Every structure is written in C-alpha cells, then in structure tokens.
Image (cartoon, rainbow, N blue to C red; front, side, top):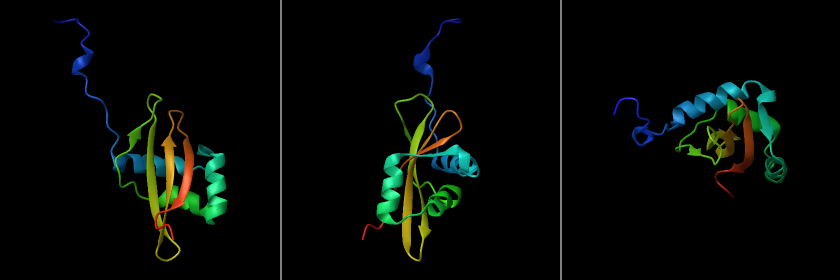
Length: 113
C-alpha cells in the first residue's frame, strides 16, 4: 500500500572488489587515514614487511575477493594484495571504516614459506 514502510523489498548493498580497491587506494593516499593495529605491527616485524611495503600495498594493490560486511553498519573488511620483492605477494587485511579511515588488522605473505 502507498505510504507503507515495507523494508522487506530493500536490496542490501554489496561492495564490489573494484570499488573497495578504489576506496582503499584513495584513502591510503593520505597516510593519516591509515590506522595500524598492534597485531599488524607485530606481524610486520615478524615477517619483515616494512611500513613502506604496507602503504604500497594499500596504494597500488588489488582486491580479488568479495569484501565482507563487518558487525558495524557501513564498514567492510577485505584483503588487498600486491607482488613485492621479486615473486613474493603480500596481503593486507583492512577494514574500510565509516569515518573515511582504514584500519589495518594484519599483514601477511600470501606464499607462506
């Protein structure tokens, strides 16, 4: 009926990998938009992935898998990857926050030796 609020017919928005990639790259262009978790910093030290590598992945990498919604409205988690150091590929698991910031959860080598 006209005027009725029927939310059952509303389609949920899906963030595509390409749009997530574009948002991450744009936000990461300004270093202050990136928040590194303690866990991410620990893993970077352990795996010898440096800050410059992490920023390069965020600014130039690719999102290949479908981003996942988090428990917080409007926030998305995904992994962005980039080939570094010859044939090794590194990935950054990042949450795109509502406040136009990125929260880095972890950093890892994709080809775990």
